[in-house]
Image 1 (tube, rainbow, N blue to C red):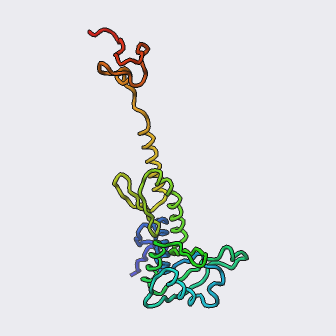
Image 2 (cartoon, rainbow, N blue to C red):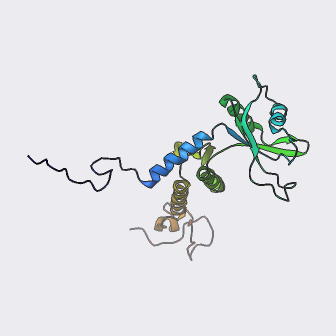
Length: 239
């Protein structure tokens, strides 16, 4: 008895059902994973080249408690510390950032919280800044949000920018979270259109021009027969 031959599959995935995830959702997942992998990283801006000497771990371990006025117990420990990018000739004026991956996440949070409250820090005439470390896409979104801050202030919108590029806004006692700068830009454009429509003067009524009660002076356009006296101009006999 001959055996039945199963139909050939066009590909190993044929016959299986996979969820439909578009490139946008897939890329968002990758960006989120990259941001999560960097959550213990801190970037330091402003430290001149060669300040750390030969042991950058010991330098940061001794300098950061004095710089931030934080008492770390246990002391700071790092998984890795290095400067970003190749060394340039003008590093004296434009020092490369230092990126450090801390061993304890709670100490990362302490440093970033101190940076939000007191940054920039002053050290021997230098301005030292601390920031979180994010993926390229998240950093670009945060910069795009920052460029829209003047428009938010001009539109009298309360706002706050949080980590991982999340903008919180409040207008007319209504609050919302925005994750895409384009959505915020569209919101501001809608506010501008609404404001312009409110600025259009309403149509002028005849009673506004001539007055409605006896003794009223014209409100906008004076009558030719009115000499400025408080008497009502002669508009015709009453019927």
